[in-house]
Structure formats: C-alpha cells, structure tokens
Amino acid sequence: MKKIKTRNPYNGELIAEHEQHSKKEISQILKKAQDTFEEWRKEDISERVALLNNLGDLLIRKKAELAQLITKEMGKPIKQSVAEIEKCRTVCEFYAINADDFLSDELIETEAQESFISYDPLGCILAIMPWNFPFWQVFRFAAPTLTAGNTAILKHASNTTGCALAIQDLFIEAGYPEGCFQTVLTDHNGIEKIIENDIVKAVTLTGSEKAGRKIASIAGQNLKKTVLELGGNNACIIWEDADLDKYISTIVNSRMLNAGQSCIAAKRFIVVEAIYEEFLQQFTKKVTTLKTGNPMDSDTDIATMARPDLAKIVQEQVNESLIKGAKIHTGNSCNKTTYEPTIITNVKPGMPLFDEEVFGPVAAIIKVKDREASIEIATKTKFGLGTMLFTEDIDAARMQIENIYDGSFFVNEMTKSDARLPFGGTKISGYGRELSKEGMLAFVNEKTIYIR
Image (cartoon, rainbow, N blue to C red):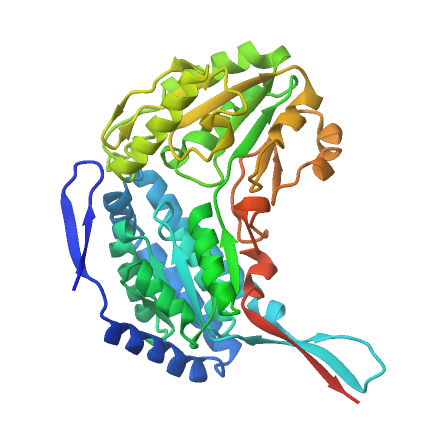
C-alpha cells in the first residue's frame, strides 16, 4: 500500500509514515458508518449533547499535546495552535447549548390539524478538510453534524494526517460509538469512489476553487448535496478616518496570522490616499516587529509555511506582479518554507497579487482616491468570502452593506469565523453555510409533516 509521510515544515524532519487504507478497509469504514448511523440517529439529543460536552472537556485537557501536533505538522506558531484548540471547544459548547432548540420540530399554522417541520439526519457525511486549521475546520463541521444525528468520515490533507487520526481518537475517548467519526487515509481516486458510494449522503469541502469544482462535479453527478468553503481574496478597506492607533494590530493580524495561510485573511489592503502614507508607515512598523523563528517558541509570531511548494507558489505570484509594475516595500525573502513578512505596493488589477488568492505572508497595498473608489475596487474580484472596513463613520459603513456581495462584512474587525454566526462565501468562494443554526441544518432532511 502507498504510504503517507508527514514532515515538520520548519526543519524537514520526518514525523511519521501512515499506510493508506485499502479498498477493503474503506468499504469496512463505510459500512461501519452506515451501521452506526442506524443506532446513532435514534439516540436522544441529550445523550449526544453529553458526549459533545465530554469532547469539549477533552480538548482542553489535551490542548498542550494537540497544539504541539498542529505545530509539528504544519508549522503554526505554538501560541496560535493552542488558540485553535481552545476555539474548537467553543463550537462544542455552542451546539451543546443550542442543539435541542435548533433541532426541535417547527410548528407551522395551516388548515391541517397539525403541520410542522421535522429535522432528520441524512446519514453518513464526507468531510474533505485542509491543513491550515487542521482541528478547527474539522470541529466546526463535526460538532453540529454529529449532534444532528449523522455520522462522519474525514478525508484530511495528507500533511496533517496525524491531526486527523488524533481527532478520531478524541471522539472515541469522549465516548462516541466508533463508527460515528472515522478518518479515511486515501488519495484523490479513493475520494471519488467514496463520494459515489450510496452510503455517503452529502459532502462538505474546505479547500481551493479547483478542488471545489472537482468535488461538486462528482457529487452533482451522483445527486448529492455539497457545502463548499473555497478560497478568498478578501479586501481590507481603510477609510481616511480609520483609527490606526487602535486597530493597526488587528489589521496586521488579519494578514499575517498563520503566516497568511488563511482563506479569510486580508489579501488586498485598499487605502484612500488621504491616509495612505500614515497607514503604510504604521503598517510597515508593525509588520517589521513581528518575531519570526521556531514555531515551538511561545513568542514566535510567524514561523514557516506548511510546505516548500506553497512558498514557491507565493514567490511566483509576487514575481509576476513585480514584472507587471508592483514594487517591493519591505521583505520578500524566501528560503524553502520560510517566507519573510512582505509588503508590496503599486498593486493593480491584472496582477496575481490583486486577482488571485495569495496564501502566504504577503500584503498587497492599493492606493485609491476616495471612499467610493475603495468600494469599487474592493468588489472587483471573482471571490466572495469576506470584506473588512476600518472607519469611525459607522453610519456610512452601514450604507455599504448592500454593496458588499461577500458572505460577510466586518467593520473595525478582521474577518473571522464564530460558532454563533453563519460562515461561507459567494461567487467562486463557494456556497452553503457552516456554523450557527444554518450549520446544524446543513445536513438534515427538513421534512414536512401534514396531518389533516
């Protein structure tokens, strides 16, 4: 069988080798998911919630070792890995509190003696997840989906295979039946066969536009529902009255968190000319104070990108943009997986730094004439995940809500996911919603009951 090797991106050391599952093993995983579903769907909601609370408690008890695993496999600074595990607990807590309400029958007044909507689980749901937030991406899907009565199969990114197996172990240790949550180790061909299998009732993917088109095509051919959270090219708009002293740390973090390897990171900073020089000065000062180094050091802000090929892609995007007229303001040194925090100015439409998703610590700065121009250039994108706006004129910001076509619009805050709020995109950033009540109802049958 083929082996999956995981390596520490900071030093290149081999972490582990994992054998891919055989066709027979995958069939057994699918059958176990289906068999478990037949019993799990009948489990009282109070029992499912109790297990979810167990899971949340277990995350906190083990957060140190789980955070170290994240950092070893994908290079995230350890303090950010700890924060990721802590955030996973919040999604467990949220659905533990709200599951009963979200899944209760909804009475509808009609001419019938009784009519209502019943929310029934669909069955086995396949999750295809990325490496950049290897626990959070999984938990924000799994917590509501399993609590709704479904079972889940996870296909994680190969470079975070250790995280995938650790998550499976967490569910078992928390008391879930073994078939409730399973990890499958396979390649792209294996995933296609799993999607086609009748046991799998729906698919959720967080990943690239290319992956989204492929998975949606296969699922569509098999008439299966999909939820897709794909790439982003988020704009961070800075109006002339922005309080930079108050928000510059947030603005920098919106780009440099996780070495810029986030779909919802600010990719394009669109700054009105009245505040441009002040913004560039403060932004540069803050970026250059970020501490780079070993991801296991507690004071490291930026350590490494997850793989050498990812750093190379970012470098190619920058170089092509420079050829087209962009200018290096600071940074742009790249060595294997280490990419220096970088600021590029004079970025315009037609350059990769403007048009594409750049998955690394590179900030593209765009100067515009005024507020009107800032909104016009911000929406000049094929992506639609999120937009940020920094201003003290909240009334004027509210007036722009209808002009922002993305899945979210954050004012004086970086775009982020929150268990209490629906999360997802528009255009080529995908469709469907995770989190909040919408996330719990993403994979249920909203069944109409009518009794005359």
